[in-house]
Amino acid sequence: MKKNSKKLAFWKDFFLYYKVSRFIFSSSLFLILISLSLWREGIVIYNVYSLGVIFLYSMVSLLSLFYKKENPYDFLLDIIFISALIKSNILYWDYIAILYLFPIFFASFFLESPLTVLFPIISLITYGITLYTTKMYTFQDLTIKLFLNGVAFFAIYVAGKTFAKKMINQTIYIAQLEEEKKKNEVFKRLYRISADLAHEIKNPLASIKAAVDLMAESETCNKKLLDLLKRETERLSSIINDFLMLSRPLDVQKTEVNIKEMVKQIVESIRYIYPEKKLKLIMPDKKFTITVPYKSLYSAISNIVKNAFEWSKNLVIISISYEKKILKICIEDDGPGIDSDSKEKIFEPFFTKKKDGTGLGLAIAKRVAIELGGRLTVTSSIYGGCKFCFEIPLENKEEQNESANS
Image (cartoon, rainbow, N blue to C red; front, top):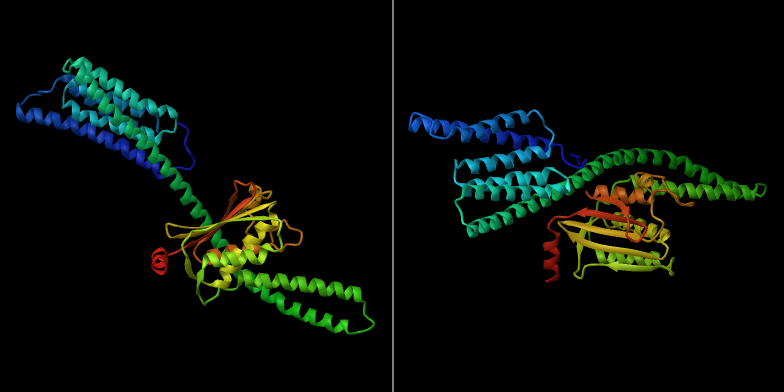
C-alpha cells in the first residue's frame, strides 16, 4: 500500500494496537470457550471446528504482529474469520455480524486505494452466503437482514473515509503550524540582530549626512557629486528607518480598532495612486472591533495592500472574516504571482523583486503578525496572483462585538 506522506507517525502505532486487540480478542475467546466447557461439563462441549477456527485465527493474528505495514490481507482475514464464526454457530449470528464493521472501518481508514470499497461488498456477500448455507432463514428474512447490514456496512465505510480525510487535513494543518513556529523563531532572532545593526549604522550615517550638508554650502564643491551623495544618504536613511521599524517592539499602547474602517482608510490612502485598478472589498455586515497596537497593525496591512496594488494587473480583492476566534484579513491580486522558491524567501528582510524596493515591507508585516501571536501566509490566488492572509487569534471578541452591536 502506498503511504500518504502527510499521515501522522502514530497512525502506525494505532494500526499495531488494532492488531494487538485482534489477537487478544481471539485468544481470549478461545480460552473462555474452553474454560466454560470444562467448567460446565468437564468436557469440551464446543465442536472441534469452532475451536479450531478461533485457534487458527489467534495464531495468524499473532504472526501478523511482526509485520507492521498495513495491507488489505489483514482485513480480509478478519472478514473470513467473522464469517467462519457465523458458520460455526458458536455465538448468536446477529451479534457476530456487528464485528464486520471493524475491518470495514479500519480498512477504509488505513488503506488509501479506492478498492477499499470492495470490503463492505465482500463482507455483505460472505455474510449472505454464510446465512444462506445455514438454512435457518426464509428468503424474505434473508433479504431484510442483508439490506439492513448492507446499509450499516457502507455507512461505516463512508465514516472511515471521512474520518481519514479529516485526520489528513488536520495533520497538514498541524505540520504547517509547526513549520510556521520554527520560522517565527528564526525571524525573532533576526529582528533582535537587526535592531543592533540598525542602531550601529544610523549614528555614522547621520554624521555623513551632516558633513554633506556642510560641504554643499561651499562654492568650490562639485554640486553633482554632492547631490548624488545626499540622495543616496537619504535613501539609506529611509532604509534604516524601515529597518528600525522592523526591529523595534510593537506599540505598547493598544487601542480599540474598527477593522473595517482601518482597511477602508488604508485603501483610500493607496488607491488614488492606482486609479485605473479595480478593488473588491468583502467584509462582514456587522461592526467589528479589536484591541491591538493601531500603528503596527496599520503599517502591516498597509504594506500588504500596497504590495498587492503594485503587482496587480487590474484587480485587488480584500476580504475580512472571523472564524473560530481567528481574525483573518486576506489580500489577493491578479498579478503574475510568485514561484515556489520565492515563497520561502518573500518574508526575509531585503528580499524583493522590485527595482526600487527595500524588501522590508512584507518582513515588517510578518513581524507584526508574529508579535500579535498570529501568522502571515502567502498562497496562490485563484485570480492568478498572490493571496496574503494576515491572521490574528482573538479571545471572546465575537461576544464583545455582538454586545456592542446590540
